[in-house]
Length: 64
Image (cartoon, rainbow, N blue to C red; front, side, top):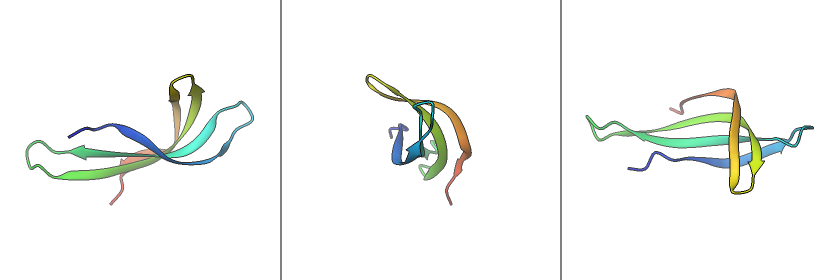
């Protein structure tokens, strides 16, 4: 199972050119085979090949 994070939505631009958005990631438990969805809100800097996460504005945690 891939554990890549992805930006689900953007909520706005900041004055310094950074963007705010929500981040999701599925994480698997190799012992049980179960997976859980993790969610957080973060600030990103646009890059030539995508976005770089700069800081968390809402901590990354298990969604439910």
